[in-house]
Image (cartoon, rainbow, N blue to C red; front, top):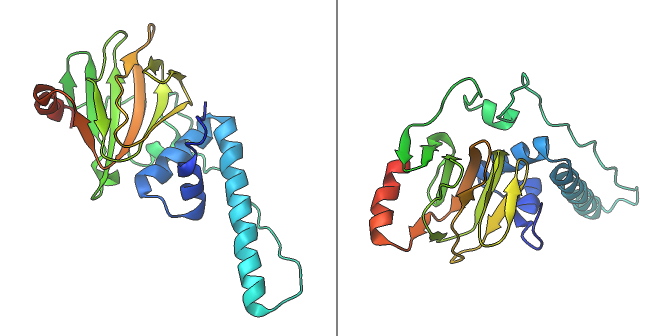
Length: 205
């Protein structure tokens, strides 16, 4: 699922303008979701054509621009949970990454992908458990790696990307079955509606 028009992150990734955490999320999503992969390849092809057009205009050349081949996603050793883009940061299905717990939700801040204004985390949501009601100071992307969750906008399973805009509240709830594991990137950080929850949520760092 790619909710339109919230595909800004694919364009940013293709243009190289996105923060590193967004690029890693986009590469991960493309590896496990063929629809997202095709969208990303198309965006990169369009970007390549536009760049070639600009170079041609600068050189005042009349030759037709060529479109370079789009490199395939680099494949590491197959992993049942984490795409290769996250494997490069040390995540494997065989190693538990969780460092904190809040009720039925466990978390892990991916510090190597964080930067000013960008928060990157892994979450594990038990069936029926919820990340407390919150919104964000900026846009948010959440890629499902295992299981699924629902919120006020829809239901998401492995390979789906849930997109959220600044100030748009939601309450992700784990679906029945296996625990939901997801990779979330928040541009601007989280804002919990309940001040007590805001304090408690710091445990998920």
